[in-house]
Length: 408
Image 1 (cartoon, one colour):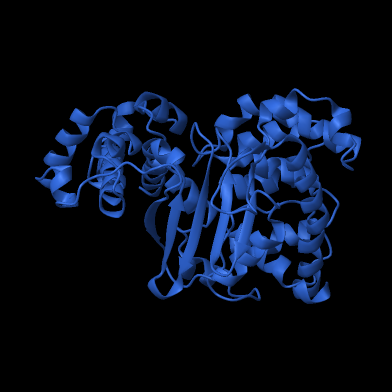
Image 2 (cartoon, rainbow, N blue to C red):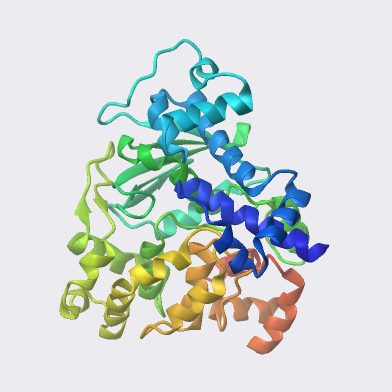
């Protein structure tokens, strides 16, 4: 029974990703991935969730559409496509069938308006308390690449490369509203066709779906404030490049190298803020350059070659960093690249996949903290002690890193 419940929940996670992408799901492929038959998948899914997989997927898309209808003035036709429906007719029929009203009736009498160039599309995203907003924003600020990302007060702004969260480039602004336990998200009109995918990406980026009370209870022996979140990523390729740049250097040094890479290979993008004016380089732009052009930025040649290899293989790697994918195939594929070892691969999986149980091997800071806190003399000792924190070891890693801040 527990195994069936786990499979049903994994299937729901996969359907959540499909709802955000707008792609037509293949239940046959999902069943094969889970190692069960189509019939068995439908049976255990119905038992766990009370609906069929198709009904579940349609409900997820309708919930996205409801949010866009109430929070924005986007035309209904745009909302239908952005929420994953392939036609306005299908959207209207599904909406009427589920809610006994038309989409325009839910919205009210105010006229729909397409956003003008420069206008922002805004929606509200909720989260569970507690949420250590200061800690997450500090993490992002320390790693923010000038020209790409900026953190100030309770707001984080950044650009989004074409292909990262949709077909077009754009920008996003997320402002925390702690008194209301929500985030006000604004994004460029160019990202509207990918609204569902973008919303899902932002929720992973800011870890808005975490269950903090469960996580905090599991990590009670570790120092740290409640509500710690695992910072994710909107652009997995950007994160992977930055992870390579960060090998054996400080966070500040990695940020400097990333800034140089963006200044040379990033493309300009108009945003409402003068300090944010470029997008991270695309994989094909990096793969097409010469290694010397990367190395002359102060990036040692072996890391420059690793970045180029990553870019050249990104078409094959991209499906492995899609939402709710298992980490093991990604880690194995990354470790086959020159210059990418187990620590880098685990770190990429930890943040790109928002993998809550990541525990990067031979992390110097983690071992130092565990030696101090639990008298762990080796990686084997650390692995043994960390078993008590499963499946939340990635949050434990963050707490262990944070425990060393006074040593810096």
